[in-house]
Figure 1 (cartoon, rainbow, N blue to C red):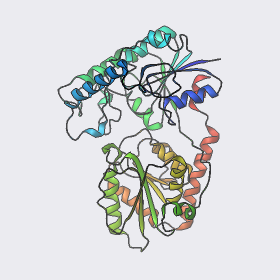
Figure 2 (spheres, rainbow, N blue to C red; figure 1 turned 135 degrees about the vertical axis):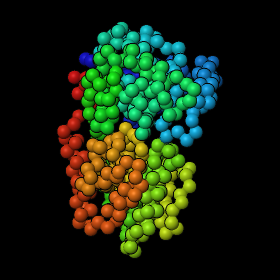
Figure 3 (cartoon, one colour; figure 1 turned 120 degrees about the horizontal axis):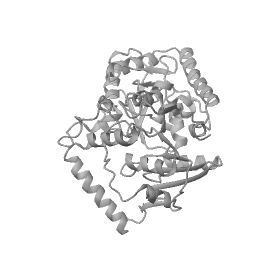
Figure 4 (cartoon, rainbow, N blue to C red; figure 1 turned 90 degrees about the vertical axis):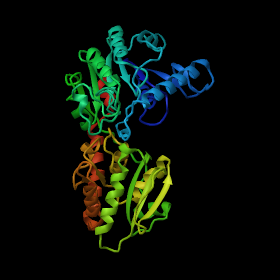
Length: 414
C-alpha cells in the first residue's frame, strides 16, 4: 500500500483544498497522512500551530510575525499593482523536514504539496526528498511555483527570467532571492507538476521547471440534479424571457478577477442591442463594488450561495462570464459547463481546456471588454435551437471528460 503525505498551510475543509484531497486519497485505500502549519478543525491532524486556540502562546506569536511581515511587505508595494497577488514567501516559521516527518510519517512513498505559503520552502522540499526519496507532486492551484512569490503574475512574464524587477515590490530583492532559491533547490529535484493546459504552458517556460514531469488535469464535477430555466429562475425572481448574465467571485472588487472589464462590456453591449428582451445581471459573492450600469439592467445580488443554490444559479443563467485576468481556474467555469451553461472568458486558466470558441462558449480577446461585449451579443441574439446545441455541447464535453479521466492522484500514485 502506497504511503502518501499531504502537506498544507491550513486544514480548511472546503472542496479543492488539501484536506479534501487527503480525505479522497484515504478513501481510495491509500495509507494517507496529513500535516499542516495551522489547524482549525476540531478533529485535528498533525500540525504546528493550533489556530482554534486564539490566545495560545505559539499561535499568538505566529500572528504577530504575520502582522509584522505584512506591514513591511506593504511598505514595498507599488500602488495600483494589487492584481499580481504577491503574498509573503519568506518561510520563516520553525518547522523543518525532520520535524514534519517525525510528526506525521517518516517514510512516505509520495508527498503531495497543497497551498503552502509561509511554510514549505524550496530548501525544505529538497530536504524532504533527500530524507525520503518520495515522489514529490505539486498541484498548481495557482502560479506560485513559477516565480519569486507571485500567485498570479497576470501580464508580467519575469517568472521566465528571474524576477529581477518586480512590478509589485520596490526596494526589495525578495522576489529575486526566492527565485534564486528555487533555481538552487528545485532545478535538479525530480517532481511532478499537475495543472491545466494554461498552468503547464507557463511552467514549461521556467528554467527550473521545464524538465519536470507534467500532468494535465481537468476537474469534472457531477451536478446532482437538473433544473429547467423556468424552475431555476423562480428561485431568484427572474422573468423567464430575460437574458440572464451570471458572474461571481469571493470579492467583486479584486482587480485580478477583472469585473471592471465585465461592467465595461455590459455597458457596451447594452448600447448596441436593439431587441426588447430585458437583461438581468445575477452577481454572486461579496457586495463590495459599485456597479455603474444602465438603470434598465436588472441587478440581483444574492451574496454567497450554498452549492445547491449555486447550481440553480447556473441553470437560471443564459451565460456565465468569467472575466478573470489570471487564474488557474476558476472552478466556477467547470460548474457552468457541467450545468450546460455556456461560458464567456478570456483565454486563461481552465477556459483553455473547457471553453471551445462558439461551441461551448466564447473566448474573448485578452483584456478586451469590447470582445466580451461581442460574446454577450452573440448569445443575446442567438436562436433558441442554436443555444440548445451549444448547451448540449457543454454537457457532452463534460460527460466525455468524465469517462476519459480519473483523479490525477490515481495516475501519479500508481
